[in-house]
Figure (spheres, one colour):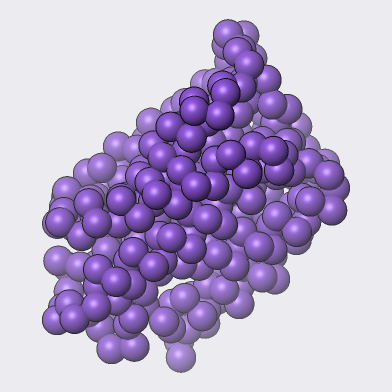
Length: 266
């Protein structure tokens, strides 16, 4: 029960971030779950797989809650969502099969490097960056497949990638945040299916696991996120986009460093 309340607390933190930044919270949640699972002595060979599977499944619920808040304010670009959704589903499912063949060390290296890159990119993002228009149907579909693959490998809702891409294509930051929340849903649904399927029959998983999804952590995180997502969304509409990005970038950098230390030093 102590750990269950700990998962709720983690969900409170991640839900606020998800609502504020229009992301599923994956890049924040995965390191936190890795810390928790390590403390409980889960098998190290599958800790990151369980963290990724549990995280991407939780994004189903954070995405629904977040997109509801942003849609009510009219900032979700559903035209982008309709084109991108099929590519996101295909790419995410493909990525889960790739992840199943990688060991935790390989996944950790990929995840930490990705988070470092994302945090630096977000923090130093320049307003003078050359902007371009949104690509056509084919370009958006290809981009969606790539976002889906990366999202499944890092357990994220894709916001860390899709938000900068949309801003680069002249989509206002608040619309990019709202649209990213919607894009997280097809990523999460297909990702959870893939991680559950690939983890079925795996002998190194803890009790109460469904494939690579650890049910006690999933339930605790869901409870926490549903409480704080609406508050995060309200904060997002009262802050400048630049401030939001810098706050999140610093948090990402800290979590990546903590996770890298745990995997490769201790």
